[in-house]
Image 1: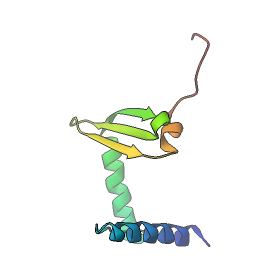
Image 2: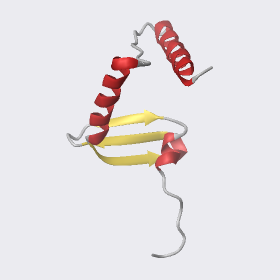
Image 3: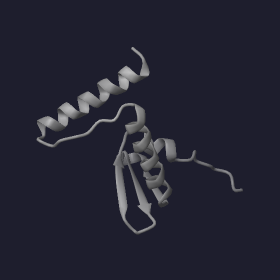
Length: 90
């Protein structure tokens, strides 16, 4: 199975879960629609002025230039954003 098929299957699982919750979703897994979504996401990320990574609770909080906050629950992202501990003075 290639990456495109894996992405489509993952998106389908999310859409099925949202349907069970009676919440409609929209999946974009390729082509111009995915390119548009990625461009919008890049602009949105560029609006971030501060990041709070909380690995212990699996959450990242993004603080945007307009003062709004976005919380992302993720088991991996907080660890990706955290710097290793340093014990020596620099």
